[in-house]
Length: 381
Ligand code: F6P
Image (tube, rainbow, N blue to C red; front, side, top):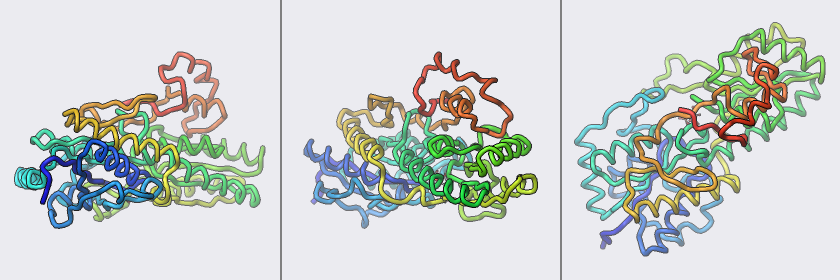
């Protein structure tokens, strides 16, 4: 019944707009090469459940490119939870690895595409070092996988956060208030940074830059005097993990960054303040055209890597090219650094990072020598 020359695909970790577009790209391009694709449900958990494995045909991918979420479902819990804080890993048992290997052999899978963030890519690498032929596709709305300039889902999340800021702009302006918007970004503040610039925030607080309450208060009171209201974007990583959180032993939940910031500055502001937590709205819904295109390319390129025998690699986008890096090189977290051109541009716009550094201290003109001249995330480790 089964062919012995197949590609497998799974989506793991948190969901994100564009996962279905990767599946669409992989299934359609595999079909062009006469290969069958099988889908595993619920991330890596599906590798243990042969009953739920199903064939994916090009007909199954009709209308998939624009659909949010993942038809293969996903989870960041279960037997394969490996992330425990940034860049810390726990081991997978050899019993588990042998079982996965046997199941893939039974299905005739010659290459397994693992779509996920840094934790899931670390699992893909662990499977590969055990001898299981995996290829990684970077997925995270946080855009914090170092080896790729962009992971799909990021643009959609920035779009959602910018839309929220545009809406908050008019209500803050009408009431003469400060509104503080909390966006996702566990270890890296890329969403806050990009949306903050696109949505004309007065201040952007990110986990990478320590902030002081007095700098934020001064900026906001100046803005209230000048334009009558203020907008602050806070990345969730600025807050502390939820106390007593036992929802997941591998990755504590974050929440409350906007509340905390607001509590600290409210008594010193010349107006009222409100907080909004955008949360999982950023992960839901239809991907932007950019993310659809990027994710489709990732799916097609992942198939190409398997056909050419380059397993153990992750596809990555270094504009204008799709490339590949070894999975072992792929899972470092990319974070915002003070010398990023986009940070300098924000300071040049008068945006406050709460660190007391002004545009005069980091002249925008010095961006001329940046390797990455455009405002794209830097590939910092
Ligand atoms: O890693 C992506 C991310 O969106 C983080 O920004 C956030 O902390 C986390 O996922 C939330 O995950 P969950 O869906 O488990 O609440």
